[in-house]
Length: 321
Image (cartoon, rainbow, N blue to C red):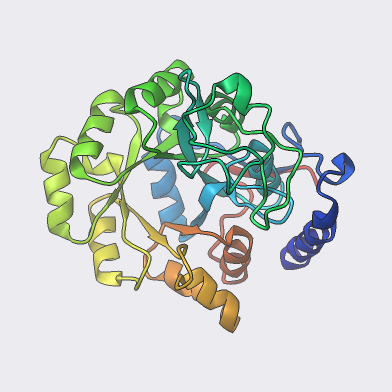
């Protein structure tokens, strides 16, 4: 049933992509009482431990899970995803010329909006007048999203995974997260131990996604003062490594593996050869979160294999019809 519903939804999105300026086909359900809710409570690590004990894996929707008619890094897109599947929302946080945090991946505006120039060259008053483009280059009715609004919307709905762009200061993001009492519902992405250490000093209760390729990498991260249970290990986007997954899980470190990426990504390979079962096979090797550009397909595969979270598990709920 789930596979049929998501397939029908995908067809509907494709059908409306030729008229994406029609507001009737792009009415997001930002405050919908229907869909999935992820409420991790006061301890995000305990939430992930619960999922691991239940033998299930979550998907993380890269850039918020864009589909035709629904652009990346948009609040409306994330809301659309959560009406269909439970997912972590990975977003990119940039900064306007007047210091407003907002969602944007690129350093320039051309690819994802009808604007142009560098992402930090315009004020928020100017940016919020722009329209986002979907991945097919079609202009939508959706404007850029403030980080504060995305974070507030996500409360009681999902977990936000934060990627920091070059224009953005850790301190500014930390200020907003702390102001919203959201440390226990975010994952902060760090690309080095130094970055992870700084993020931990700013938000000691938040969890940090850090690239880990060995037990030694984990030991060095812990030696900087970050507890094991505040770390999620990002283990790459190439070949799964079950031995590394086992080591990390034994140390109370949740495992993230990415199927996303460029033209050689696992996502693209699965889409090309139709081997959707591969998502469940990756999960079964000890992966707690699959970071993917195909969140719907990945979740369906996990669900078919009995590895997707179900209603009532570990603070995850499905409400409405």
